[in-house]
Length: 343
Image (cartoon, helix red, strand yellow):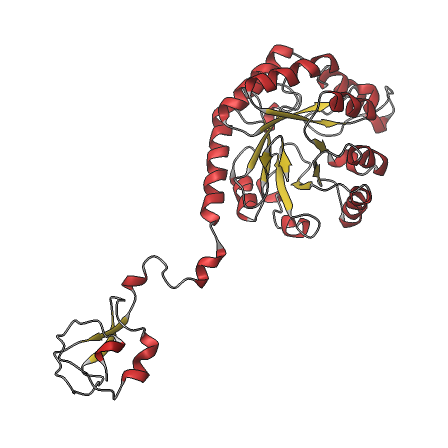
């Protein structure tokens, strides 16, 4: 899988995404600062969200339309989205700014109009939020772009996931990265359920974590389980506030996340070292040694050959084969036993 020239997969360093979300606080300058800070933190991409309130919901005061979540409790969905949406008029300038800054920018769209705008701006990939992924028509629109797809699975059960993947496969989407996600804000570490990622691998070889915890623990666990991407909400400072500030990380934290995820990935190494006979430290293991001076033609016995450290002699399993053979030369105690010393 490849986004904007960057290869992604278990065999490559983890792909780290800074999710701007609503941390722009409606300011173009602040959005640019976030892009610049993310680039300085060493992330691979910044992600924005493209929508407006009218594309998401309707402006009514029916009880169903009031947010129940503590962070946004009391607002209607319409008012919340009206407050936090990134104005579409900023989108073109942000893509140009990201290119000038040298960092990949892509988006999560929420309607057909947004998809068309992003295609016009040559958006290199699309993220599908799990709340939107339940809509087969929307998934089909994304699939028809032909772009790499990243999809969160936060509100899916197995049937929902299979339905969405079926749409993507029907539209011949080649590359799909599935994000395990707990759609809670902030998410509790003990609710991470990272083992779900193993099941996601049944649907795509590309899996990752969209992480709403402040600490690194879940992200590092995701990499250890074979995840190839991590997404974290990113802000200049939690002190600046905003609906997502409580679960967004800052520049120094993002730098640490990137560094630690890469180190975790490096520590995974390769499984085929189990097939090698020259693993580090092998010289400290036991092997067969002459433990007292012997003469030519003397017989090998348990008194003159033992299995001891270090590991430069014949392997311990050869002990039965050498017993009873005769030495073809005199040897000093401390000589590593070799086949060439035996008749």
